[in-house]
Image (cartoon, rainbow, N blue to C red; front, top):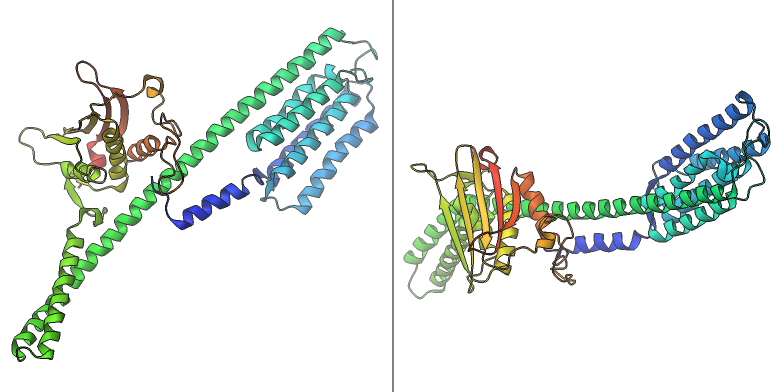
Length: 445
């Protein structure tokens, strides 16, 4: 995949530069979740103290909850609700949440309080949205807080006062369970976040490829239209120049100028003829072409006539005409990517088989190479899955990153295809990719 345009490099550099600082959380998300926690904390404290008649250090509890409300009010007035908070800002707010909840739990029974489980939430949010160094720091702080809760002098609110006391071993077990749950939940959230980010990046790359193909196709349509419109005036210029050259004295400067105009007009017409007949510069929204020609065009981008053979096997139903399809940039790029991959790993030849019936269109691309690695066969089509070495910077900087198959699969599936990957069986060897479209998805009306 090509990434040679300067604007793409600028965008990529900007993203890389700001990635450590710009977060993925908006201010209203953190403030809203804190308001929800505040309501829950206040309701719990009041119900336990006034409804259940359990003794609590009520003033200290309300002060802790009030600190939560004060921070929320400050953030609501100081920051726009839709603003993306920076990494350190989100980490600082989550750190406050951990400390505030720890203090409240410290006053209400410590590790024996069943609401200790809520200490997992801030670290999980951090793992899903912040960089690892902030998450590691928050997890370490939370583990220290869990350890501190095992040593609280405030008993769990109970009747009678002090009538319920967990054994030390059990308190240690609860703290250990919370710590393990914290690490597991945060690790799982981080893994999901990483996969989501990689998938998002790969989808952006897919959109860039498709947009580039569509821009090229649109530019080609304009070129073809220009060639058609300019053909008539150029023909007039050519005829006029020819008549002038005949009527002027032989060898005169005026005749030489007329001959020059004639030759340049002929050159312009030749250039426009090439533009109008170039298949790669046609308008995909109106062009109709046979399926076999579509496959040849997709392969021509990657086949330079080298030592390897490229074979086409187009089988139409008996007595049926060629299947006319619409030239779609997504289909061209997707098939071309698969053909390029097959040519790279083949030993001698790549075969492209196509057939269709009343309902479906089948295209199979097979090669005589070593085939797909069994260890990655089931995961083919996932982004950043590759057995090649990582690509280098430059115009081909995405090679080797495992995006090729993902982009091809995504584009072809968006066109209506169902893809399957496998290795040939029997005497034949090599990889095989099958694509099946509903006929209505490709056929030109």
